[in-house]
Image (tube, rainbow over all chains, first blue to last red; front, side, top):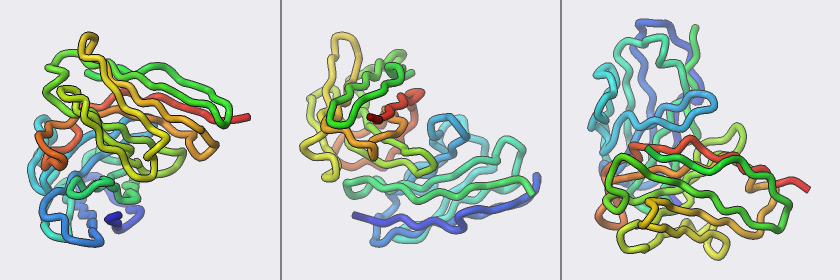
Length: 107
Length: 121
């Protein structure tokens, strides 16, 4: 199985900060990489697909980049509603696998 | 819109069947994926079903224990998991994805609300 490793596991930041989360795949997955946001007790929400495509309705402060094995999710200016847990997921080879998550907390 | 069946409490060794009813879109136009999340853990992909053909793809971890099915007449997908153990205690989600082959560049864009399955003696 492809292992997806996110860093950091947790992150404290302030409203207005620029934040970057990284995701590394254990083998090349081209650009078959998605990013999700999850709040407690809720289903994950798709933010970015195909590594860098913004899902419809998602604010433009979210962006994604990367290909091969290294990917990043950037939030350009944190808003109060962005404090949540973020997961990367590869959809290149089954079983599809998720990262362990990055919990974004208010500083 | 995907609406799932309600919470379940099961004994070890038994089975659970979760339903996922689609509305507001062409049910056969999107694959349905099943993802579970154990308490305090990240999501875990279980497999998908192509509602158009009925074709399935299961994670090897669940092979032999999971069955995904659909009823196109009522736009509903099902996931049945057998031989339950306490390790199967989790929230089970269905989610749709635009997909035409075994892999897809698209993400899972619509999710059900989740079904809590508790396995306890």
